[in-house]
Image (cartoon, rainbow, N blue to C red):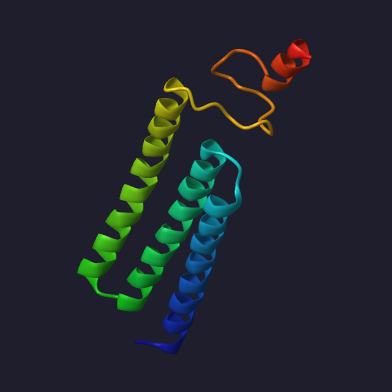
Length: 119
């Protein structure tokens, strides 16, 4: 293994770990289910994908590279779909967005408009 590929793999691992950390902080600090799910799905997918690419660069073996790239494709195809379905299910059972949400597309009206009408 050459030194430049080790540096590239290390840099990719640090970048991937940073995005996973951002996803974890977003899950802990954001206000409602929808914001948390957005942080977990976007930053988590990017972080795990970059970590798998770092593994592929570090390994440099064809079978590991192929599996790592298959994992990246799997993450990119399944995470947005599952996040959307979970959010739709949460909304349908009655979990509404927090007051910071400016537009609720599924209800057809803005939560701020509903609050203004109630006052």
